[in-house]
Length: 263
Length: 187
Image 1 (cartoon, each protein chain N blue to C red):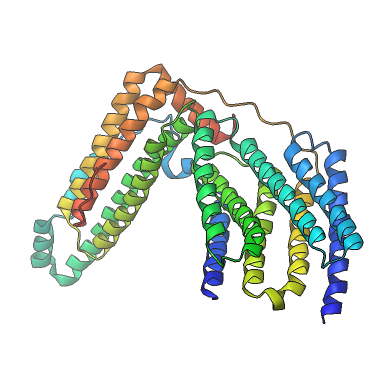
Image 2 (tube, chains in turn orange, cyan; image 1 turned 45 degrees about the horizontal axis):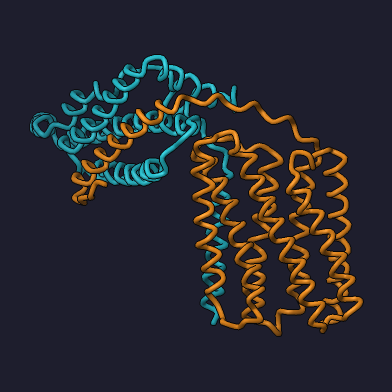
């Protein structure tokens, strides 16, 4: 069984590597790396990680501590590149809207810090699993950022154009899966270890396919930045809307017998 | 031991649901509440008719002169009218909120407290309006409640209209730009 999974894992890894190479070529041929440089770096980093891991494990073996540390270090670098690629997508969507972009990145930063803290501290205190926690924390934060990004876009009616949206969805699917995969591994280290890597590779392959589909064409030129309104318009209108809304809620509370403290 | 796994799985499912919801194609807001630059008369003007339709005296008169069947039928129809009136108030409110959100997106600076406060108030407003609709549908809400709601929306409309007039060209520019954004001319 273990041998069969090992064989299957090897095939899955090879297929994923070939697809990544194909995606990288597609990215360069369509010149989309100029529009998404951080995403291109992430993809290149992921390819290098694959090669590094093969060299480490072939040379030092699967039971070597050095190989294990080296492989996880490479994973750390790739996770960092993944975070940068997601931030790039956020900026692509909201970069033109200075005011709400400032609000959004601050909100995301606070959210990511809280999530990373919770993901790192919840669970067992086993120090050997800390690196797994870090991987899970980054993945959970990425999934949160993607969802928050799309919710903000919907709320402010900012269009998330392709391929940015599909890149974000690809990151979400993979990150969400890593969170679940790592958590199951943490709980069932012996039983799950044999299939953990295989399942992770399959999930990543699915994301590569999503990205490949999204990036099959050359990205259109970015729309011109919308002209900003004078700051005084917001300063005048926004508080008035809020005070009226507050009053309405207060009255509605009275109607339904639930008093609310106005801020 | 598996509780944490359930929590993580729950979070993942929740995120997935939110993602699905965020990716849904948004309905065209102009279909619901019309173009922003259009200055329509407030729905509040119909309040006297709604008030009359829900008046207890009318109900009593119908019951005495027309019988139970007729009174019930008329009450049912009048409740429908009142519910439509609430929908119209909702539309009016949505229109103002839409303007506020688009102004935020086109402003070089926004105040986080005001933005989050608006989100909270909007959620509360929607919840309470739905509760009022249910009450009305069940026959529990009457004219005083409706009058209170319409008074508040009326105040909001008047204040916004005044603010827009005071701002003059800037407000007109904001409305025009907002509409252009929604038509896809700019974004």
